[in-house]
Amino acid sequence: MGDHEAVRRFAAEATVEPEAIARARAHALEIGANPISPEVGAQCAVIAAAGRALNIVEIGTGGGVSGLWLMHGSPRATLTTIDKEPEHLAVARKAFTDSRIPPARVRFITGRAADVLPRMNEASYDIVLIDADPEGVIEYVEHGLRLARAGGTVLVPRVLAGGAVADPVKRGPLESAYRSLIQETQDSPAVLGALSIVGEGLLQLTTVADQS
Image 1 (cartoon, rainbow, N blue to C red):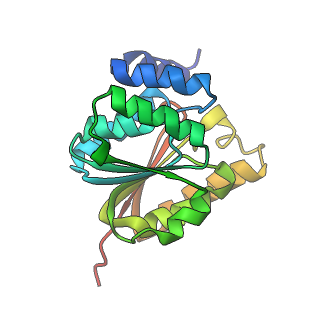
Image 2: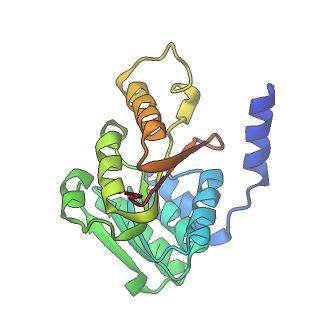
């Protein structure tokens, strides 16, 4: 086992997932929702807590796992969660109820992200988490940066999933999209970006207020 793999395994084993989120994960996996890993979830919770996030939107509900992690970090936040699969939203709704999160704190929207996002208010959210169709990730990030307030953060998990993005030999459309996203955001003066390699990877983009 190489050093990098040993570090990733240690990070995974060192992450303790709250019992309520672990239960939600089990239910999400039963319906094929493929939630974010505990390591990435813990990082999302820390970002939510550090930013004292009050308004959060996530694209891709994941059976409620990612939303629960975000609310774990910022219990006073209001979450809007969007998914095109009614079953995923139904499982998430039960997960939030079981976790005793007040119904007024979570808004569930059934629909395609490409249809819903253009209708949402810009510069209104502290955190935008994007965990939807990978082929639309660049479009969703553009929307996410529009929705995030100055100093708000856009989170994109799975950017390193499977290691294909880091392999220059892999030149499929998905790998190319993620590579372009990482490169363009790293070069942009409008955001501060950081790429975490734990779990399936997490791209973090914090918007920068206009200095002009």
